[in-house]
Length: 406
Figure 1 (cartoon, one colour):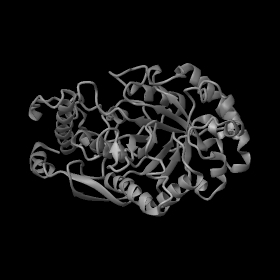
Figure 2 (cartoon, helix red, strand yellow):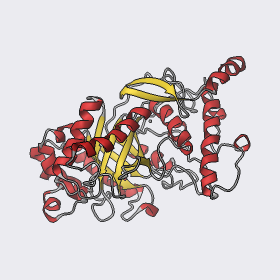
Figure 3 (cartoon, helix red, strand yellow):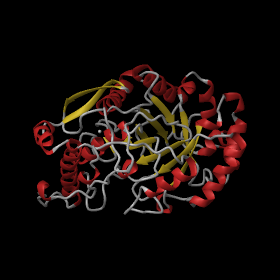
């Protein structure tokens, strides 16, 4: 999830005609008229010194994954993802936009609003820039909110019902060019239901589409499966033996909230040992952890995590990586500088693999204008919709113009 003043002025008229990315497969992009998007491809961006084109090859493993759920601050202004590619020493591999929810008798939502809501303009705009930085932009469906995987939606035995709600998910993936989907089932779902969803995604979006699951870590162990230490209902170990299980790229395991400890390697060892006959390699297990103690129980400090990762690398050579829940308040920077969590994780996991990008004036202008529109929509809601927000007067919290380097 890139010019002289004369050229910028000429391009501005074009930029005022908004577009959105839609795809026929995850890697083939087309533009259609809509309110969220920027021109696709070519150059990409970073306000670091010694920038280069994107023709730099980076290994995906070990992965550095971050979940992006809180999209606006308390005042209603968008929280920019841009520092993840403009701040130094960050080597993010995957960004997961969340959480998508299927709503019975309603439309799909991203958190509390439809994905096309104006408040999300900055999210989708910036996601395209991150994608051009060779960061995989995925969506996540499910999570703690119930409904997405109920017998009345995606777990329905009635194919007509399933197709109705799956169609909303399909359309969202297409519209925003999502390169993968993280399936986070935290409510009872049948074995047949999850297998159908996985196989349908593979059929519709092809082999390049990334399909991941987000189980609690204990659910992947023999003891956890027997004792019900699992929020999903279906058996992950049984799933691994099915054809649908072979389609899973990796598992974003939740090593927190009582279902695991990211600061201790023992549970990781147990997962690998218990699934040797299921081809679950260490590089398919991503250690999910909290970015802040405010985000749940079981926060692990960076130094403790680093010791655990070192131990696991000594044992296996490499692991799947680290996933952080969630972006907006990551330590040590907190809400003011949330990207610092990714800097610390890069030092632990992926040093010297930072993308080098370019930002044009045209891109900076477009990003600035869309940020103002997203902020206006968010602030109106934060203030109860009663205050008139003047879009031109808003100043972005991120200086896109200062990031120009092309």
